[in-house]
Length: 142
Image (cartoon, rainbow, N blue to C red; front, side, top):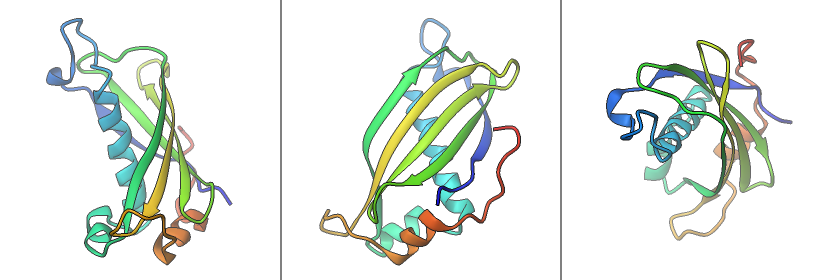
């Protein structure tokens, strides 16, 4: 059962922009990762604590379509929708929309996996619960 959409609102900082005055392409990865971490936290899990318990969530594939650019001062919404692929793999479907006009900036599919301390894929009860839980309410603005 897919989880509900989760989102956060952020604002572009000056130092995230390149010499063209637009957000550097690599910075979008930080926005997407921050939203994934906040999503997991909203589900009652802490990625740092999980790592200390040898439960690691890693990104194994990143697909990003850059549709438009953000500029310094732009406020934007990063949405996250998680879909299970298997007991150890999951897909984060993510989008970034500019708040002022709703324009789609980024369309992304990020594939993650749970691995043990040896780097081997492993299913963990905490992660399985995250994949099937539907505890956050759908975001009406996402």
